[in-house]
Image 1 (cartoon, rainbow, N blue to C red):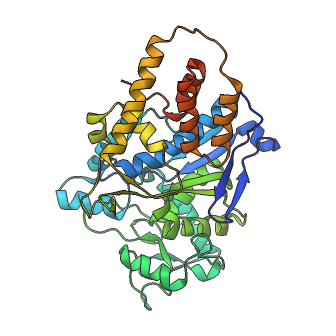
Image 2: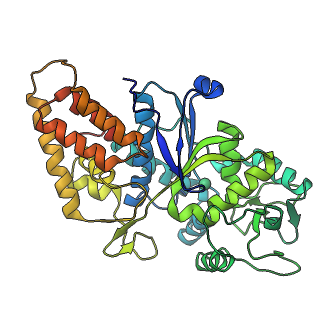
Image 3: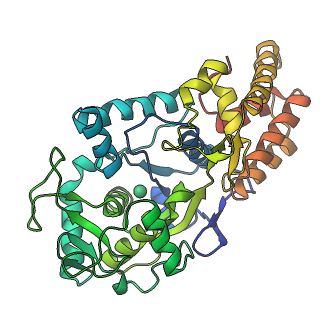
Length: 399
Ligand SMILES: [Zn+2]
């Protein structure tokens, strides 16, 4: 059902403008849009913050495809990274077993929540050759230097900090807060903002041979390499949670554009808001996680999806059980209506569908799209209800 309200326009964090994801470009028409979303670090099973991000991008993918356009969607698995390796060490288990187990939980959760799976879910551990080639290229072209690790030299990329719009002092403060600052000195980093491309591995950690010494990749280079390997040197949409803006996406952008000499690396950076619970950002350290599996014990999967997408993707919001219960009542009304509907395959009311499409085309305004769904339900338009549910909840069950 191509619609005049298409194409999609999305807000780009870097330029603060809405960017048209226009399918008319010659190359794009053939290969479709390209989307890279930073996936999970598999050391703790998915909570509602993760489910929010991945459900939002599922709506985007389904909306694009429902409008007859192709989209190639890559979501990585960061199975080589400090928090995962620390957890494996603490629990006395092999990092590969932990990563496998938690990746399965993620896929199980998102399958229940009705996603259209990403086209590629690359794992860092299988991408190390490409990562080393990229690190070598950065080193040879003067963007990297080696001391106690191989570092990216941020002074070679003048617009470092522009994506997150943070001052140097704020960037350093955030690195310190996240325990990513490391050491500055003659045998370490030259500058506090420099970050590792390749580093030595600790005991029990995975290590790959390289001319920079046996070791493992830094976090940011992993995503640059996986995005470019599967989607090309420049991508349409790069997504992820807002907490990744700095330092992860800032660094990814610096490396990618330094590697290719092409800008922009992403036509639009889309960032999802953080989910709070009991007044604080959901986080492992605070112990206030609401897991997807807990919500599925209390409500049908479609209700969980409706609850998630009833929030504006770019804003922070607070998870409440009351909010989930309201979404469950809506899901039950939708289920009962569709179960008793005898209207067959009548055409949907075009005004209802136009409003729904306009809502999503305008920077993925999912709360407005949910209002259009409620209007279709009130008007007993089963065809419109089904079309809208296909995009908003995917294959998540109403029962
Ligand atoms: Zn990433």
